[in-house]
Image 1 (cartoon, rainbow, N blue to C red):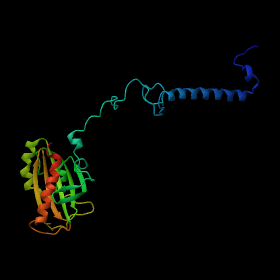
Image 2: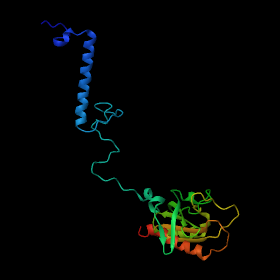
Image 3: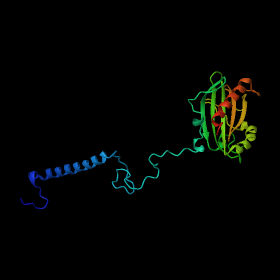
Length: 245
């Protein structure tokens, strides 16, 4: 048999030109699928956008340079810093029951932030200026047995000495800090001074500002025993997560 150029031979020799092309196309597809099968046998085949240096573009980062964000295999992730972990949900989870003696409450609001001026009523001035306040969190606790709500504001400082220096300023300006209301409850009307019991405690390098009111925002110059007892118990609850820090 004489072979001329790329003329087909054997069983394919009698096929029309179109059939030759179809057979060739099927052979190319079969070869590609065999390559895919080999890749899949060695692991998961992931199609992705090309990366610089990829050997096979579209098959993921096949270059020899590792991705910058990838952690070494078997190595634990880096722990969060104190600033990163200082948030309301971490220290006062929504599903937790808050109890102290006869005091039983549930968390009804939570918020936090890095700028301590953000939790103050007047955003144009900072009563903690130059006192190294590093962040804050606020929660609302609502008593299960009585219509009393307690706002707890936790202020974080660089160290215990800085927190101690700020105690007097927080006590003198307790009314300048926002009251964290339960979700759906709004502040009283302008000019109304709700009856309230206030307490400020130093716990390590944190300060807790605890304020209790009645949910109906009833007015009064002095707190009654119910509000005072609620504030004492809520303050004890607020300090527990930071007692040994």
